[in-house]
View 1: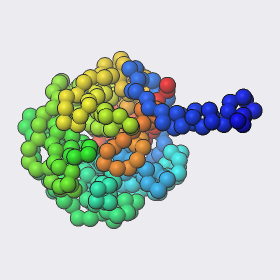
View 2: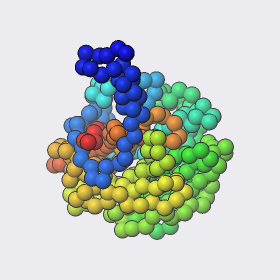
View 3: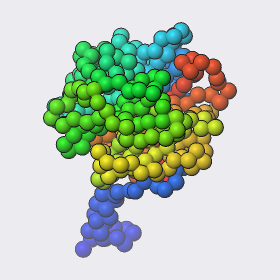
View 4: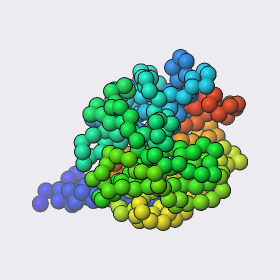
Length: 325
């Protein structure tokens, strides 16, 4: 039997490598992050970059986002492909000719097509498809994703996310009203319209369940993670919930402002009090929205602690949290 210089046999080393490669992590019970500073500045004519969605693409990083101009206009954009997060500072920012606000980007593997879902289109939620997701203006015509309405909300349906399991696709969304909503369809019917009916699956105060809901599959586990943006006394922060089924009940996980999923209390960020609308970095681009708890990172929107004013004019910028274990 051959041995390495440290006395470990080649066979044992192989087993150790296999175990390392197959490592599965539980979510922590308490979270602690480190943060970058702002990764990019909006190009001329825009005051903010926000509502990030990101997916891996051909070994690189693809990011779409919402923009706001110097007036009252919302829009959307993507960055040229990134090799590293530091590339955001110099990457070309490509405006979309038709706004896709609060976008959700993923690859729908069963039909080999990229999907971009968004709000404020022809219906409550809308989607477009493409074979090449890097082209900001290469998407198909708008198609209805959800045609329903909600009551008791000043905004109506906002901040959709879409996720699938083996048999069904699910739409989750918020309404700035303390409620999280869900709709579903058989996976074989997607891409398509979730219809006009949704179910309230969570209710709380407006501040506790505000907006920016995201739902993920935990890698190599039959378990799901939901994060929801909340309004705290010290800024925007994320609360987390878990479930064993996308159609099931969600259990609070890290839900206080003092010990959140991610917020001022644990982000490590000094430049921003807000840890706001963004996306966890996914292991693959498909509809399962899979994230690896061993290596959690969150692309978020933050703003200078000294900033204020009308919401659309707040100077949001992208930054990245990395979980410390």
